[in-house]
Length: 108
Image (tube, rainbow, N blue to C red):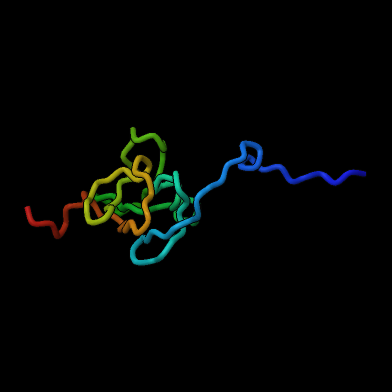
């Protein structure tokens, strides 16, 4: 019997992924990979919601994954109402759970 090599998608295309880096959600450090959206990085870390609706405070996270539904809104690096499914994760990004419309505490 011959030994079978373990074939992964990365190995099949001879990809050499860059190393993981760190982002944070509400002060909690989480790993992210180059090329992941913030929503994908949060999902991969087991986080399913990062927004609460303004009326009832119900949890929301990614729904459509393509930027059409706005369920994945988050405060990213201090800017509210960012669609986490469309923003590429970058080293040091700070994601904060968004409450309601995301403008609480902002000077208008």
